Amino acid sequence: MATQESNEQPQEQAHTGRRALLGAAVLGAGGAVLGLSGSARADARHGGRGMKSLPVPTIVAHRGASGYRPEHTLGSYQLALDMGADIVEAGDLVPTKDGHLVCRHEPEIGGTTDVADHPEFAGRRTTKVLDGVSTTGWFTEDFTLAELKTLRAAERIPANRPHNTLYNGRWEIPTFEEVLRWQEEQTRSRGKQVWIYPELKHPTYFRKLGLPLEERVAKLLRKYRRDRWNSPVILQSFEPTSIQRLHKLVDNPLVVLLSGASTRPWDFVESGDPRTVADLIKPAGLREIASYAQGIGPTLDLVIPKDTAGNLTRPTTLVADAHKVGLKLHPWTLRNENPFLPANFRKGTDADVYGDVFGAYRAYFATGIDGIFTDQPDTGLLAREDFVNG
Image (tube, rainbow, N blue to C red):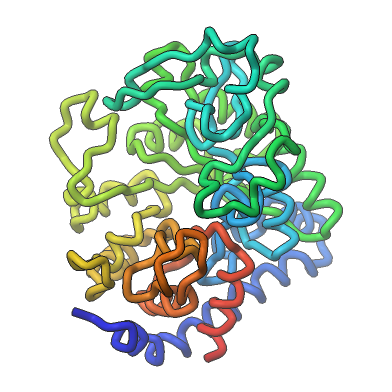
């Protein structure tokens, strides 16, 4: 069993390569911006060299700066940019009754909005089976966009983030189109390309309801000319067939999300495909993913498993195996608070107290991952600075 110290050992071997990679990424991005030709400037507006222009390891702001603001709000996204995040996961995309795409972690919005405080919507509370799980609450597909715009966002995990409840009620639910306009405005005002990383949520479920996601996403990306290989929009989903469908609709970089090794993507369950995530992360499964996607987003436990006590053990071969077939890895999700950290990096038992998250970053960065999702992008950026320059 690896200790905190032993997890840090590979870091020394990785430093030189990491510095070179980061330097190359920064020079690449700078070259695109500083180029004098009109074509170079146009290329920069669409991300220049695509994903290659991003620093390594890339810091992805998970649902924005969700460690400090209610997730999937313009306030959370804006703060993530202000902190310096390389990419903002602006949008877990779910549809409304009238076909608009909005940004919510799940279609059930009882835990992330004030919908329960609206007596006019009391009758909308219902129970549905969402990817095989009975779920009770209020669902975006039962509301028009106009109705959803009367709601305000709230902190999803107040026990871990009591300070974030200060901002309950401040922001409305953004649409994906509003996010694309916000991205354009922020890119212009900041003088640097802003990247976003939306996720398509439960695509099989919504397709069966007559509200398919992929075509709606593609239509908006084409409208805003962000459907190219070097566009600053990375698309992700837990369902491989959704990514395959997007591969035919747009040229954006695509990422297959991967949950626990024993789980099955819901589209596999629906189609009778017996494979599990464990099968997808074998060399043959990774080669198949690489035929239509540019990356994978594994849970951190697929990169470094934990023992029965919750301590990190030894890294798997997933990073090396994925890199062999040309896939990037952006695992999820590192958070500062104790309950979300491996046991050997916790400090005390309080649910809202920060643990040794910098130690955890060192362990994960040392595996050679290309980026990481985090709720606290400022912490992630400091951890990367320590790792690259250490």
